[in-house]
Image (cartoon, rainbow, N blue to C red; front, top):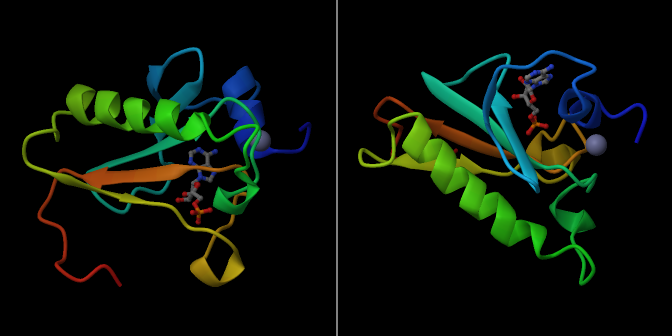
Length: 114
Ligand code: AMP
Ligand code: ZN
């Protein structure tokens, strides 16, 4: 996906602050952090959103969740706790149409999700 900003970040064409990487996922700091720790975990495969998951690519969910746990460990929020958010579609505020999981922490988060 030539025009996808996250595909370009994964390829190294656009700089990013990498937190973790393996064969399947890339994790980097959100450019506009909402919390002291705000990392995006994305599959290296271009999948447009949660709704783009299907029987062919669903194994990425396992890789992403493994990546999230690595990120929580690396950033030191593993024990205190953290929140994971996926915005799916326009009403949810999804702005980048390459599946990504927000990992938020480093502070006491609000008890209400929205
Ligand atoms: P969403 O609204 O769920 O689609 O989230 C997209 C996220 O990507 C936002 O939190 C942006 O701040 C973040 N973002 C956009 N461009 C970049 C970039 N070049 N590097 C890091 N984060 C980015
Ligand atoms: Zn992409």
